[in-house]
Amino acid sequence: MLTERRRDSREMLNRHSSAVIDSNQAFTGALPEEVNTMIGSLARPIAWSQSLGRRITVALIPKAGDDLQLLHDRTTLSKTDLVNRAIISHAFIDAQQRAGRDLIVRDNGTGETKLVRFV
Image (cartoon, rainbow, N blue to C red):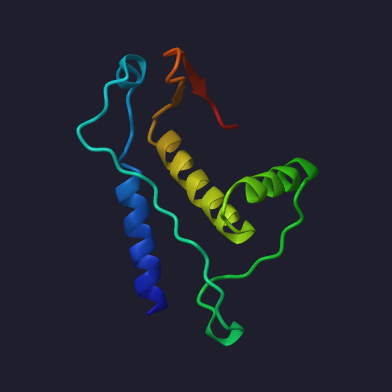
């Protein structure tokens, strides 16, 4: 069952990693024919003996800890959900960069675009 869930998670990530907007689309605001969204699910409290996920302990740098608290305060998401989404988002961005793609952010109000680089 755990293997099925991991496979399903990988398949979902692969499906969502194909949603890329090229620079012409980002500049003009035109949308691709198909837009896939990244889907995160809320963490549910489960009994320790039934835990299906991996547990880790991390030491956050002050900026990351502050940002985590800020996001937690202004969303309905738990800290676990936020960390899970951050990891999934990072995996998506990394896959896109490895495939030679750029991450471009567009201001919907002004149309201004910026190239985002993760180093």
